[in-house]
Image 1 (cartoon, helix red, strand yellow):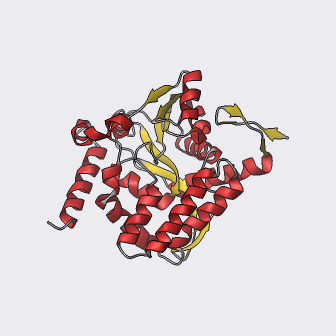
Image 2 (cartoon, one colour):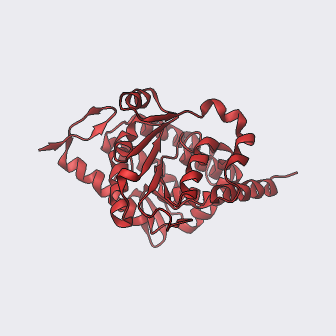
Image 3 (cartoon, one colour):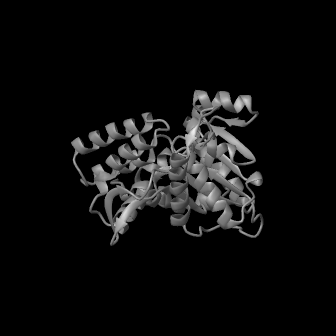
Length: 300
C-alpha cells in the first residue's frame, strides 16, 4: 500500500517504509528543537509561521556560508571547501531520493566529525554576525516580524543542521528552528546523521509533530518557501506563500491561488528596507547586534 503526498505539483507514490523514514526525520527534528521562545505567546497561541531558510530568508545556502566562514578561520583547507561545495551540488540535485540525499548530506557533514557541538555553535554565532547577516532578505524578515508582532510563533524549517538553524533563529529573535539532526556522542559530532535529512516530506512531518506538541491549528498557520520541494510543507498550512519561487513552485502557486512574494529584485534596497522592520521587534534587535558585532570585528 502506498501513500501519495503531493510533491512538485503532482501526486507521487511514496512507499510506506520511505514515508516512515520521512516521519522519523520530522519527529526527531521536532524533539530536538526544544520548546522555543515566543515574544508574545499569549496573543495567538494556536497560530504560527514556518520559514524555509535558503533563498527564502537568506540568499544562497546557509550551510555553505557557514563552511566558507570556517575556511576563513583556517578550520579546514581550500581544497576541502571546494569538495564540500561539490557535495552540496549533489545534495541539491538529488531531488526526493532519500538515499541519495542522506548520502550527500552525510558527506557534507563529515567536515565536523570529531568537533564539539558547543564549539561549532560559538563559531556559528561569529560567522552569522560576520558574513551571513549581510545575506538576509529584508522583505521576508519583515513578514516574519509581522507574525512575531501578532503574537505567533515563528519557526525556521530547513535541511541545514539544527544547531546552525538554531543559531540563525536565536540571532533573529525567532521562536526556534527545525533542522536536520546530526549524530552526537559525548557532545561531539560523529559526522553522520541521526536519521534522514529534513527535506521535502520530512519538513511537513516535522511541522505536524511540532503542531501537535505546541497545540497549533495548522489551518491558521502560514508557511513560506522558494522551492517546489517544499510543496508538502506549504500544503499543510492554511496560508501557504511562495517566496522567490522556482519555476515549478511558481506554477503550482498560481494553479492553487497561493500568494507569491518575490524580493529578488529588491536586494539593492537592503539598507533602506531593513529599518522598516519594526524597531521594537526581535529581528531588528538581532540584526542591529549582528551588524554592530561584525563592524567591531572588522579591521578599520
